[in-house]
Image (cartoon, rainbow, N blue to C red):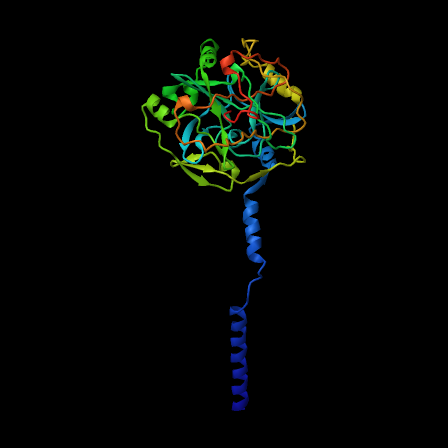
Amino acid sequence: MKRVLAQNAVRLMLGGVTACLLTVVDIPNPIAPSSLVSQARAATEVSISTFYEDLSSHGDWVSYHGATVFVPVDVPDDWRPYTLGHWVYTEEYGWLWVSDEPFGWATYHYGRWGYADDIGWYWVPGTRWAPAWVTWRRDREHIIWAPLPPRRDPDLISIEVTFDTTPDYYWVVVPSREFLAADVSVAVIRDRSEFVPIVEAAQPAGDVTIQNNVVVNKVIDVDVIEKETDQNVTAVKVSKTDAPEQSGKLENDTVAVFEGEVKADPKAKPAKLKDIEQVKQVQAGRKSKPTEGARADGAEPEETAKPEQPAAEQQEAEPEQAAKPEKRKAKEQPAAEQQQAEPEQVAKPKPRSQKNKACDPQTDANC
């Protein structure tokens, strides 16, 4: 009997050791690591439908001339893009717009803004992130910027660069000494009789550029800003985020940046489209419009064909010469303006003067 008990005990012990060995030497499925990599990559790839879902509570999505566009609600009559927020400087991307608006993470870092008298300011989604999609002007006492207008791009791919006159009412004018204000909106010159002459007299400074497949916004010289504001410009840190809705937000001198891919999906649509006539009624009830009093000889956007799909952001080709330095004197800044392509109802502008005539980047490498 003792011998039988001893044999059973040995069997139990061996069985336990075998189980332990099986547990220790169990090799994970070799496919698992690549799956994890795919999941991590997928986390930084979002569909353009993200804009439709997340912005629906802050404005109306409408079908406008064949394109799905976003119209913000609950904004003042004199509201315009790139006014409620402030500028910060980053070593990687240059001047970055930090918006105080809940839809700002999308509308100031992807896509473009346009204006039409019948629906007001509207935003067309894009797939490439940028610190800010703006064009610049400046004179001795003012820094001036304007949103780059949308362009027809059915394939959501930027393939063309052209320049023309930007309407006067697109421009945001602030005294140079107020450029670093924590709330730029309080420094914006809104009186048309005052800001229009400033815009017309100012010189084009340039647009965002593409360097090594990264959008860079270093047109305005940091040394100039420090001199004009009598403040030191301290570059804020950049942290990468996998959540696009966190992009562009500043916290503890660190700004979040989403560099993942926003996939264009022609089949993606908002859950609900607003009746365009209701949007027009809201716009018609506004007490003032930026086009009121605009000059007919150069303040109106160019008439173009109706877009078939949402326009993507326009990419400016990188110069063949050496990359632009981080700091550059104002006199070295390129003289170029971004062409206005929307809205299509108004007349084509005439150039104001020969000195502001844009060059052709297809033939002139210095554009």
